[in-house]
Image (cartoon, rainbow, N blue to C red; front, top):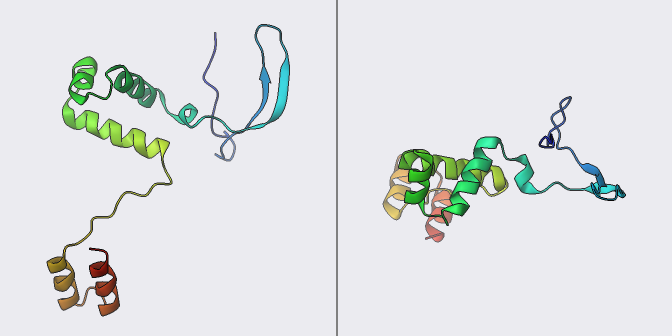
Length: 122
């Protein structure tokens, strides 16, 4: 029986590194310091979702049918998967429109400098 490799240290929670690989056929061993694949840190639910999503070729309706789950649940699972795979990518902040910026400025919730920065991004 094979088990999924742990990805986090049970003592301190740091990411584990792969240091030895073994060939099951000839028993050759390679040692070094290898980074695990980003997919190895996914939990079982995320792996199941990813497999299903790919088998369904990204068709959300087909994923809903296959997993017998609602559209909002599937969308939440997709967002959770993306966050797990790409944690360094911060979610895109909602860009306030011109009126919102002026309202915030008028209510003194932002400074004039902040307003200029927000308006210049439009």
